Image (cartoon, rainbow, N blue to C red; front, top):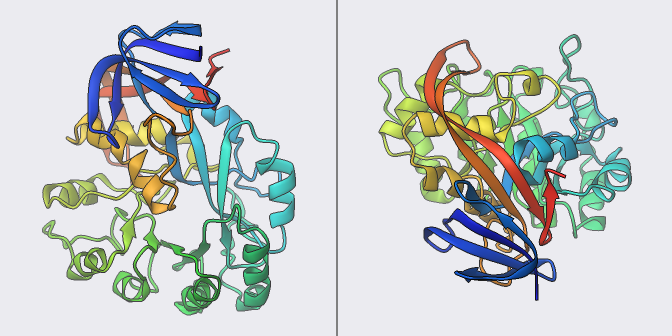
Length: 375
C-alpha cells in the first residue's frame, strides 16, 4: 500500500520529459508509481495544481543563528516550496561543526553546504556592517579548510569563495586561487561569487574548471556577462564550452533584467535558477526561489524549462542525480505549486521593474514520501 497519493495534478518532471495530468504515489520514503487510479493511505486531491520534483535552491544562506546573514530553512520551505537548500559558504572551517550539529542535522528539510575557504565564513554581512571575509588573507587557512572538507565528505559539496570589491577588497584573485588549490587537494568543485571589479569577470572565468560554478552569472554592469549591445561576452561562451556552470544567485545585488534579457535572447540559459536568499535579500528584491523562478517565467521561459532549472539543473551541478526527479525509486520529495495570473510587480537588484502576468506560489511540500506542508 502506498503511503501517499497525489491525485489529478499537472505533473511536470523534466528529468523524465513528463508534463501530464496524472497521479503520483509515494511509499517507504520514495516515489513508488506514476499513473492513473493509484491508491494509498493518504490521498490528496491536487487537481488544478502543479506537481514537480522537490525544488532545489542552489544558492542560499541558512546558517540561522550562527551567521548574521542566515535565514531559517524550515520557514522558507513552508512558504517557498524548497525541499533542498544548498548553503553557499555561510560557514568556514572555524564554525562548520556548529552549522552541522545545530542547524543541518536537526533540520526537517535537506541542507547541503559548500564550505567557505575563509576560516570564519561570512561573518560580517548585514545592512549596517559589511566586511568581506576574503579581504584578509590571514583568515584563509587552506589546511584547515581541506581537513574539514575531508572529515565531512558525506555532506560538504565543495569550496565556496567570494571575490570582488566587496568580498575580497584588495586581495583580488588570491582567494580564488587559494580556493582552487584546496578544491584540487580534496577533489571537489568550487562555487565562485563575483561582485564588482576588481577582479574582472574574464580573469575569474579563465581560472574556473569543468564542474566549477560561477554564481551571480546574470549580474548587471559592471562585470556583466554581456556587451552593452546584448551580445554574450566571448569569455563567457568559452567558459561554458569548458564545462563551467552558470548559476543565477539573485540576492540583493546580483541580478539585472537588462542582462537577463540579453542572455536569454542569445539562447544562453543558466544551468540553475537560485535565489541567494539571506537576511537582507529575503526582504526583497529576491525574496525566495519561487519569486526568482516567476521572474524567468515573465521574461519568456516556459514553465517546464523554469522547473528544470530549479530541479534537474541544480541536482546535476551538485552531482546528486537522486534529487530533482520523480522517477520511481527516487527520493520522495515533491513540490506542489499554484500558478497565479494577474498583475505582479517584480524588481531586479538595481531598481528596474517588470510587470509580469504570472506568479508561482507554494501549495504544499512532500518530504520523504509524506505530506509535510501545509499542516
